Image (tube, rainbow, N blue to C red; front, side, top):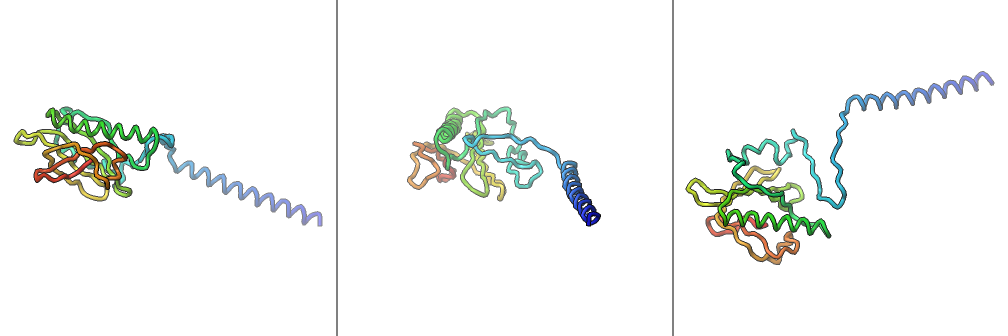
Length: 198
């Protein structure tokens, strides 16, 4: 009986040692096959950070840079901060977002009125496509100053639009995305139709 108990204890110890070896080997093999990456940390009060792997086909800016710039010499263009849509934000974050949004509107309007080249990106509302409106304030081939907008969505091709006028207007009652802004910038095409407002 004593001998069987000792054999049982040895068998259990070997079993436990085998399990430990399996977990240890598994941990080592995972560590050998993975690369550690230090991702940026943001506080919940900050704006949402979206990370796209550089080779990911869903990257909205990846291979389209040349297509977006279309041969423009960007050293001639003033730029400003990225402006995003301010929905689902509150408190200081909302106030900061609205200030950036209003500054973007002023940037477009002032550059267009003063006939100065400018470029900015405006994020628009969409939960699954994250559209970005790339806006260039510039002269066309005939020398007329225009606002050239290109809508970029991850799920759709680039859509260039020629805009010949920009006006401030009061937001309509159904424009919930304005988040209480007192005015929005209306971008108007050659036929006098509003193409985009932000």
